[in-house]
Image 1 (cartoon, helix red, strand yellow):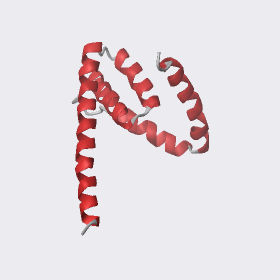
Image 2 (tube, one colour; image 1 turned 30 degrees about the horizontal axis):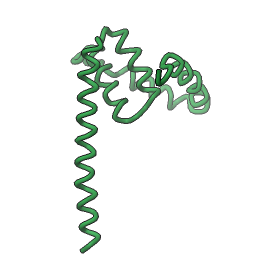
Image 3 (cartoon, helix red, strand yellow; image 1 turned 90 degrees about the vertical axis):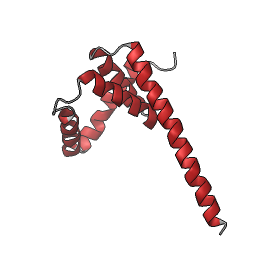
Image 4 (spheres, helix red, strand yellow; image 1 turned 60 degrees about the horizontal axis):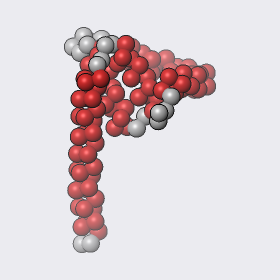
Length: 113
């Protein structure tokens, strides 16, 4: 096992209390942002959570992975659906590395001029 994701989620939520106590208005705004997610009803909860998990992978956020894996499971996401969403994240992240490699090559060339 790489991580204990249930403990990760619990520990993240407990640790977040320090930030919430220090900056309650910010946390209220953050919670309102999360509550507004999906308010228009165009995507169902499962789809939103699969997207969130894919984004969490590309941003390398363990707390996000724990939170959205739990929510995706509760929303009924299957292992097959999750693997396709994660495949998209892997492909995109590799694509982003490709594009930024092109940028790095261009920067290197410009510094040679």
